[in-house]
Image 1: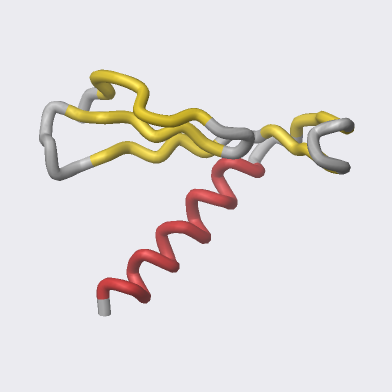
Image 2: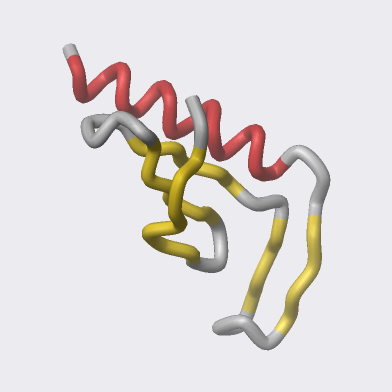
Length: 63
């Protein structure tokens, strides 16, 4: 599956369109923010963990 265009970019993730109009790609970032964005950092693996959590939530909602 190929990303075609960026639909949304926030502090924690990017949402991409794909060639299939029924599918999107969620790309989670490793960035950390606190105090309304005043403090910024990065933690390797945070995006992967958020992806796993999101996957489980969508599985639950699909039941």
